[in-house]
Image (cartoon, rainbow, N blue to C red; front, side, top):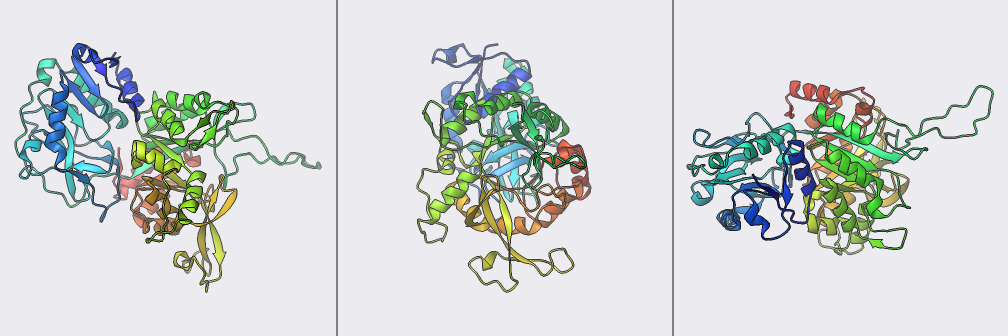
Length: 525
């Protein structure tokens, strides 16, 4: 058959192409209008269609348009981001297309086409499966005649997603064209949705002293080994070699196989002498995206920059190259701090300030959607008197009796440049600011807990959680599988991240998920 792929010029098209190659399918890119006539199977990013006229896609869009709206964030965060389950409709007369109700699939979207078989029967005839987020039930997949489409990302849904792509493309053309309309089947919301808590493996990538890219991990952001002095000598070198915990692509493949729900690659080396298109991290992302089929976040260097020859590169252009290489999200850190400082200089009625449309967060979110923008926050404690009544009094945490923090009080100050530079900004001010600018997710670190193994900073996470309505990833301090249970049971955070304990093999991803399941926390298996 003639399998063609339409590249619409934005987003992570590369990952879907990689999944086709992984499954052994050969395809051609749509390059001219005449190529549509050559295609017996045509893939649009985000939907799988065969023998499809563009009019069919327009008909589907028209049928669903009146019911497409934003999720309600009163009882949940938006975007809907993570692994959720599906409920099949009409399995007696329609092929399941490889979907399993026992599996989970990766969703990331702020809008949904609600499932309303009585109020919108025309659209209901297309519905193949539904998903629930909070108390909202929406269309997860559609199937009618020779059209099959998914709201979730099969190319980012691991083996479960690859199974769907393979099942659809391996069907005969006659089988694909024979699906009847779906009858109007009620799907009232269940008491609880199927969204799982995400386990994220993070890899800090930098060049070592020999110039090789390696995964490393710091203790409170120090990535070099301690260099002990020989007995009876004066230590001339204050720092040892960069900790080498493995090669980034090999580790990414290992964590994918172990069941990681997402992967982060954080570039902590500044390649100032490399043109943007020759950045070593682009090659790392391309190679990793060929091996892993779960969401991939890239951080570090997502900002306006200048090539060695003087060519200016915008943050949007930098992000676009990473998306084209296979990344799903970009993480912004210091640039987010500076952007919020600027917006606070432009007062607003809500007290947060106003953006000017030029920050990396705003430009990337405008072009790719807020779900593509993660802001990584690096706060540290500032201790104050128990009677503190200063400008951050509403954010002050007081230590609980019987803990090591008893009789202590503190607020959280934001930092930039990997924790080396403190800024006149609190963690709440920054979190609320980036949410307003357009960030879709917050990666919340803790300088005080990083590398300690004492567990996540629950006070910090709870403080930020009650001030924003976008998803959050808890980071820093995990030392055991039990710490993941604690953070999910004591906070409403959507995901938790670890690095060193995974790199050193002290705790396995499978072990974390076993412990979560035993504790009644919904986890993808």
